[in-house]
Image (cartoon, rainbow, N blue to C red; front, top):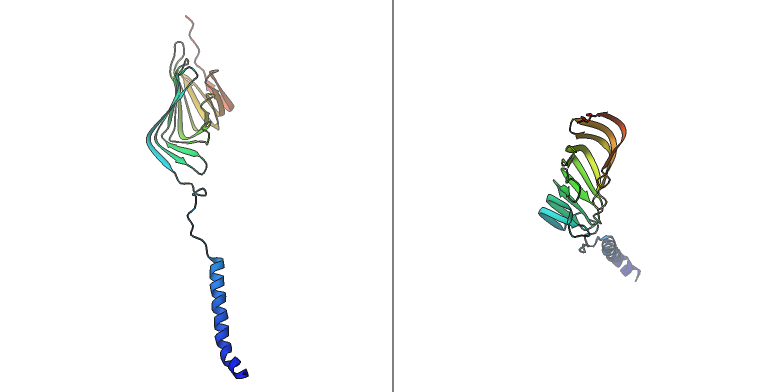
Amino acid sequence: MNRRIQQALPLLILIALAGMTIWLERTTRIEDKPSSGSLRHDPDVIIDNFTLYRYDETGAIQHTLTARQMRHYPDDDSAELDHPTLRYEGKLAPTHISSERALLTKDGKEAILRDNVRVLREASPGRAEMTLATSLLYVYPEEEIARTDQPVRMTQGKSVATGVGMVADRIKENYVLESRVKATIERARRP
């Protein structure tokens, strides 16, 4: 009987090794189950020539947002825009804000404009056209407020101001440069 055990021992060892190999393969296998996509940052919607209108409480257009392309991302509910333009209307002179690209946050309450950001407030009676240039601008469309911590150049008529950092309130018609301000102001002519 001892001899039969000795002859069967290599076969028993092979069976045990085969069983351990199968067990090891199954415990270390990565399942190829379809994922929900929540860990990926891929667009679920792409819209070319995108336009969004926002109305005030009276039904008049408050602002219009247009872009060459909008991509929506479901993982964080954000949207990226190519060549966006935001146009404010209403009682004040129309204001246009544009850039190369922008990011809209989840709730749409903040737009982060990047690269070649331009602001143009159209001329109105008694006020020359105003332009502003920067590389980054945080815009809060509902409040009509914009901020940046980057260098800014503003021009109005022949007046020019530069600085670093700015807070702009369109409703109050305030544009405040925060630091390193240099300005050349054109004097108003008296009648």
